[in-house]
Image 1: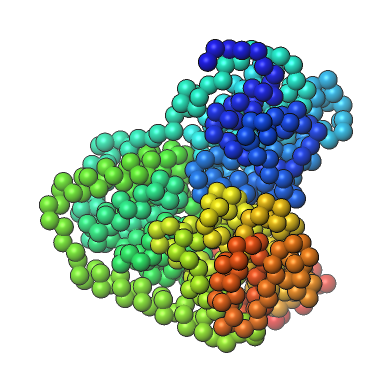
Image 2 (image 1 turned 60 degrees about the vertical axis):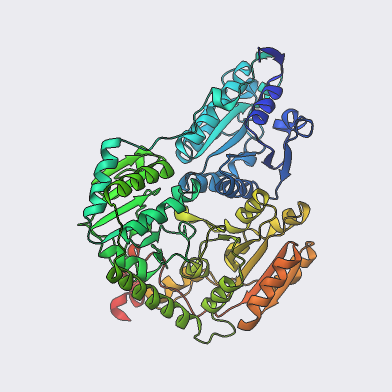
Length: 578
């Protein structure tokens, strides 16, 4: 296509169309109205939310489900700064995203005009790149660069354009994505692949850690074949419970906070670890349950698409900068060439099964302890039993949401969309809405505490407006329970700021907003209520009234200390005087 005359708004819109963008999420603003006016004719759906932070979480989840970069937009100044938290979360989650950021008009920059903010500086630390359009003629070129970097570096990119640069006449050629970015990644260095295969063959106790890259590249089947050849247990990385099917005999569950003791005990004994599609984050590998499970002596083979992540947190024997699927395929090929007749190690299988059984028995027994009115673990246990195999589950941060890490299991089709290590509350519900946009026919639920629900319940009206039948499962325990547990264990039950006075019930609030509202206070009601909500295919809030005294261990036990007080005024608060 030769260069033709168009407006910058048209160049931006046509570039979005070429990228396959079928919707943009945000809140309307005058700064980008010239672009917005083109969307309906271009076939781009504008999805308004109630708070711009939600737009970022929605598109984060949309990308995790589809693999396609999401696009968000807002009014210059406060509209864009409202997106800071969700963009930072997407950056931490390595999720490609483009943030279209109108900024103050060039004639008034520096005059502290209405809604002026230096958003480029604000976003520099929480994006892979900030790109400022230097001239209207560069509008499409800079947007192409934004998409190129977002996909290449796996994260959000800020595309900053002064609001007056949407107007005028420019000469532009609209390119197809293959003309300016390459999505394919290779298998990594061939000699390193050979060495990785040799290490795995010689290992006595190999363990595989399967991460987000395995999910994104749809390579669980290849990882399973590697595991079967080696009789190697497969653990999932922290909050990626969908990274390996739980019905496979070598699945041992997730590592990390409230993860599987089976996984951690087996990782602790490993002599070789194949960590595939994971950065091996610090928090995701820190000791849990008093198990310092990540072995210093193990030889680690790490596969990650981003060279910055290789050996960033743990020293490696072999590092492979590669696409998870391509690397896994080559490792499998080498194993098959060297192991003519794979033999299943029955003793290893017996050991793995014993660990699986012990962990399953522990979490079921914990769930069956009576609660008043409902043990939150029992509710999570009943939710897992009631979920369809293809369900997408978004989880928030907090005591109950994190405990879900012990109970959530996925086969092949479902997905786990979690807040991950940025750990912001208010993530799960808007993320679930984005996942529902990505897969309209799939059942989607969000698991949320009542604290996080206070940050996201306004988006029920977004779900109603766009007919997104997400089920928000809200655990009503009346407190910020992750922090309450800290004050119990470290501050002698002195509660400050943790109790949440809420409406008598969230169910009528949901109904008033046009959704369905269900409240349960008996454990046996949880499964049937969830099934009823999913079958209705309507936006629903399922409120579970649970016991606020049955709490998981401290979330940040590694970062807290018992208090000492030096001033006489605070002497009674000192641990030595308890």
